[in-house]
Image 1 (cartoon, one colour):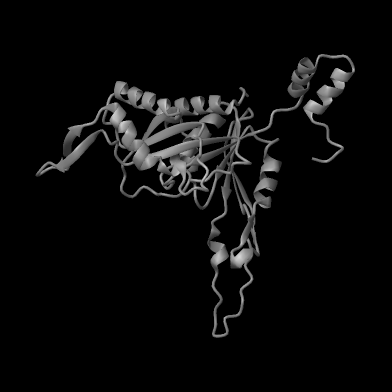
Image 2 (cartoon, one colour):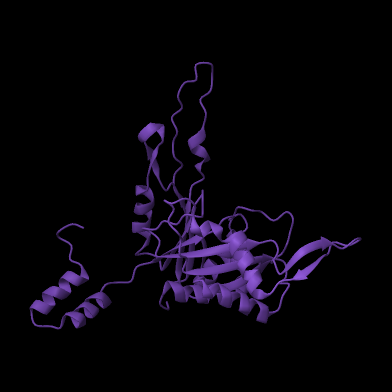
Length: 309
């Protein structure tokens, strides 16, 4: 930090030297500093079908008056343009320009939802021919957004399983389930599309969910750092096959190991549903689309500690 900048703690020490109580002075100084945007990173093993969930949560926040930015990393395919011709002349790769679009905003009020796509990192020479990734562009984009928005949601182009530990203020695990593992030893019923099997208890279901769908949170190898999410969201394809009491017991067993469930969402099991892409402008502006996401959005807002607009 440059020497000419003064933190709230430094200013509080100066106030204490002038005779004020340090804890009181620090509380006063921190209250005088304007709140900055919460930076949220969703963690997922498979993220293809989660864009609708994330877009719905963001739209629900904007509907309550929050300024929300979806900060998405540019598709990295532009880096892999191959040289053409016999002599294989090197190709100069040019990064695409940032693109900003207002997806939704209140006619009269602060609530708005903005989508910004830009390059997150630049590559430089490293050891043994492997490039070094410099995250300066992402830090610059965040620095410009933190005072203009209440929540910034990071949408990476590549892996979603490793959070930006230094940049994100909260990490939420989101899991897409084609089927809830509430039965075992399942067999197909002849002449139908149904499957039958021995029922699992909610605690057994929670254990299977952790083993199959949350193993990416704990890394691999001795050098891997475990990820400790601030919350957990489940998304099911189709209707939930169990009742609310069953899900509450699953949530309770997840909380036993330190995983706080923020809610269960569901999407229609359409075979041709697009995998990568935010909801359309018509969906984001539709109350029928936003309404199912409001409860999860409210719980997640408490986790982020975002004040009312």
